[in-house]
Length: 590
Image 1 (cartoon, one colour):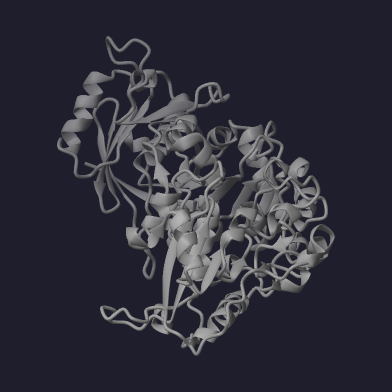
Image 2: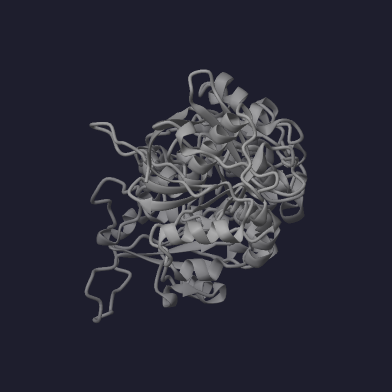
């Protein structure tokens, strides 16, 4: 085999900006970052963050064209650097052949990269190398990244160095392309190390994803293709939202960037429109998925790397699709797909999540994830040393420890908050009122609930028949008391109206006209608990309904079948329980 065409004669530490009298900072080496898809570009950013400009390094980017998943890639790259540093492929190759780049780095490999003359370092853009993509690799047995058709061009090795996330990949590389073995090195996975270093920010990310006030987070992950979670069960996010109590769970969806690239932003959001209206949070493709994993309590996913990383973080993990048909059977991800517990999309989703949380432990899948993620606390340094070793002939040396910033914040896409809920409520033996609210989704089996509760924004047919309505905006134009009277006049079937007054205060109007002020006391040393006004209104209605059922019918003249609820049946305090959370609310007649 011919040696790689990368070994330029060593110079005496030349400067990349030699002859540029306009340069203020000394530039010893120019590095070209190469992307083919948004996935590889975001992973590339993890790697190039390890190269510091104060060390004399200047970064440029280019798109190696040809992938069907390149949509949005140019826009992403120009968000990282000045537009003039994002080069057309032909321009980048010409500059490289003219000796302007001292190193090229890519988190994907393609034989078309053979035209580069600078040393090319390639790294994985997922949790190792796992997926079979014979349409692009021409290989039915080797995964993308380790296939002979990608690594060789005309019998010559395309990359100078092949970074692996675990030494296990050496065995598979030896089968698919033994000529590449001398150029492969196990460095670990800096992407996963970033997640580990971001665990202290878990509360921050959870707050941004709504996992507060006792709510726990379900991160749903779908890779691309017909074998993915959404490829098999596109209705699963919506079914989760309908099945899980809204005061106990948040659901966030992470989609592989290839899904966005192939179907387009509008196509993705149109597909998810009903789920967005039911409370789904959609994490954008450029960043944020790692923060969702750090924040999550459960992962519901498939054979994509996101699910694998979530399991490696110790999150309770369930697979709704295994994707074995497109995985290298010898890969750790295939073992993960065969080993991880499964979610039955047609079963009781709420019960399955609770059962998994009770029986799953962080060590259940550790033996599998360990086979793909080595050097968990040292990957960044290893990758940095690998890159700087290529730049050493130009006098470029690392001047500081590797900088590995926290993962990007999730910045989820949201729809309008759900405005109609199916409610189940009962008074427990200890006196607390247990309430489960489910976002109302037609055709999801919630028609047999105890009652419906709506917000002031509700515009569907339930607005006129729901016995409970709440306004959540304390700074609304119409004063709370006026709004309550207006609602009572407009909706004769309204039994409990409630308006948020801010700072833990609520104004309640019962049918018949009695008013109460409800407020949440604060215990010394603790933050004041928050309670959603519609949740509180639902609990009050449940208590009133139970009390009214035990009393003789009292109907004022002309009221037909309507009851008049009395405030004195509520007492001075009500305790509302949602899942594991209990909030005591004081009640005062006004």
